[in-house]
Image (cartoon, rainbow, N blue to C red; front, side, top):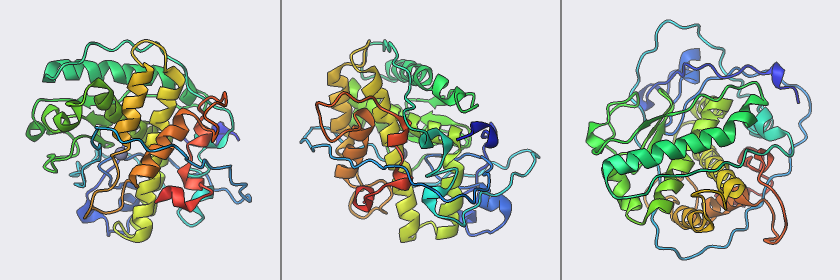
Length: 345
Ligand SMILES: [Zn+2]
């Protein structure tokens, strides 16, 4: 693959609201919604036959942990009209998802053997207070950025660290994605590239300890990577066309979410045993994610508990053999080209 042929995502991310999603203008198609992530990246036409990569087959066993889920808010962002910037070309959504250069054929996940850096991540002591939590999240973000920076640089993408909003009260959130009135625990706002972890909403998860709090942060960082590499833009364009709440639209959402969990798994699988990323922390993340599935009455936007746990675990250790010495790679985190559709439920 030739990274030079793709256009790196602009730093300015366009967005819009769910209310405007039926518009069919170029900007509406590009400027799409997800409480989780938004991005901009220009596709490069690719008429070559696509040789679909081997997709992972998550097989992670399901534990019966005490954790709780880490779903994103269902609310969509409030638009902030961008300044007059050049209008990007809409992603081409005409071909298969698996061969979309922003999704299944994204250069970052197309090449075999690309890992991330192992980092010595020394997190401050966890305690149940807004200031301590914010300091913990901020350092965790720095750890993830160190882990991913060189990998993205390989594809001519300069990783821009995400922002963090970790105020005490969710009601005080006033970032680019509007007011968080969803009651959900945390989310990623692509508009201003910020991970939003309100202390009050996160407390239902964070009460289980540092490992559960870190699991959520790490997942949201996965959405930031998707934003940086163009996945978010490709996803948003496709979901716009498919119909936001359609079966296809919900499948796209699950593919997006499962990839974010897989990217998170890569962080754990690569850095486990160093600094604060102990096996117990990794186990706690698995436990947490095993309860992060779609809840009754919700759209099917995240995946089943089993599949979320499976993709996270596949990100940590991409092998059906628990004893096999394999390292996490981006190639294994490609739900857009999954061989087994059941892993996307
Ligand atoms: Zn998510």
